[in-house]
Image (cartoon, rainbow, N blue to C red; front, side):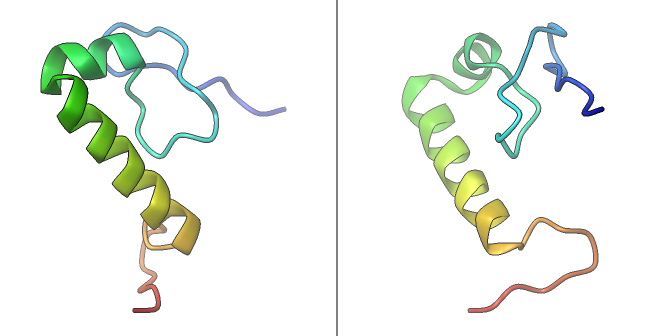
Length: 60
């Protein structure tokens, strides 16, 4: 059974495929619309490359 991901700020639901545990509402509130979109895109890209796995160095 996979545990639900919860936002670290409000405990709301977060998409299971997201690299960060921050919901859209809180992310926009903390960083603003443009910065949050950029952060999500970059962290999701790095997660797909495997660069966010503890102790692993990804390919260039």
